[in-house]
Structure formats: C-alpha cells, structure tokens
Image (cartoon, rainbow, N blue to C red; front, side, top):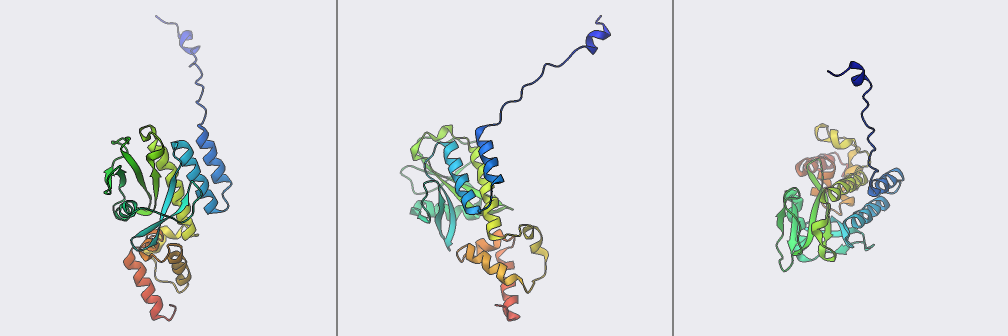
Length: 233
C-alpha cells in the first residue's frame, strides 16, 4: 500500500503556458489605440493580409442597389471596382450570408463551408460575409491568386473579420446600444437625423441602413413615412 504522505507530497508538474501568438498582440494594439475607425479597419485588413499571406484583401460595402465597392483595401486603394463575377457573388451573399468561392475560369460563385471544405489552387476569390445580428454588414473579398490558399487559417480570417464588422456598425450607428432596443420602440421625432446619417453611410442603400440599425426594411420605411406625416422629412 502507498503511504498517505506519498499522496500528500505529490505535486503536479508546472505547466508552462504557450506564448500568445503575434497576431493577438497586434490586434490588442489596434483595439486599444482605436480612435479613428477607418484607420483601425485598414490596420485590421493589413493584419488579415499579413496572417493569410495574401496581398489583396478588401472590404466590400454597398455603393448603390445591387452594386458594391472596395471601400477599404490592404493595397491602399480606396473605392475600387469589382469584376462582374464578384459583384454578382456579393449580391447573392448579402441575402444568403453564405461563404462563397469563385474558381478560375468560372463566373459563378459556389457555396463554401469553412468547417468542411478546403481551398485549392483552382480557387481565385473567397468572399467572407461580415455578419452582425444575422445581417451582412459587409463582405471580405480575398484574392487567392497570390499564394497557396490551402494553408490559410480561415478561423482567424473569420475572427478578424468579426472585429471589422463591429467597427463598421458603430460607424453607422455611434450609439451601438440602440441596435438592441430600436425594433420595439415607438418612432421618435429626433430619429430622422440618425436614420438619414445611416442611409448616407450606406451610400443611399436603405436596405443596408435598416440592417445595421437593427431594423427590417419595412420598419425603416414605416419610420420614414411617420416622420414625413409629422413634417419631419
């Protein structure tokens, strides 16, 4: 039999924690120094490009109904124009919230399951939806032609994309807590400026403005109609 003292003297060997990955320190610095959202979004895009090994990663935002522009890009280009194939995929993604991939030689996007599927050399573009409260706020467009995409950490891309989604939402709706309360509130007389600011931020796209404000398009139209009846619009 073992002596009781043997059990009492037993000590679990110390476990040395693994050092935090470098990208986590970079992300912390970006968030802690956050002052101007557009600069932070640009820094996050560059971090995604650095960690994925890609040179061209952009954030697609609505420019007009059925049209998107690359408002932010890791290459430094602002308001870039997407090809027809990418525009078509972005329109589909804004409704479906699916990850989509466009293959070399094809103009049609295909569904991509990040937990199951893997990228290959035939894939030339990956579109990652930036989702907030079940709505697509924007999309990440990753040009895969500059590297071997099968080695990319897609969970890291998704996580950093989520940080961008939150920054985009607070750009449109500075008082972020209204996202959680607004759908059940009465129309307030002082809402017009906030609604108009959201529409302007979304380049006139009222459907997207409604989403980032936590409303359905019908609720947004109702509010605008009520404000028009009261002479506010």
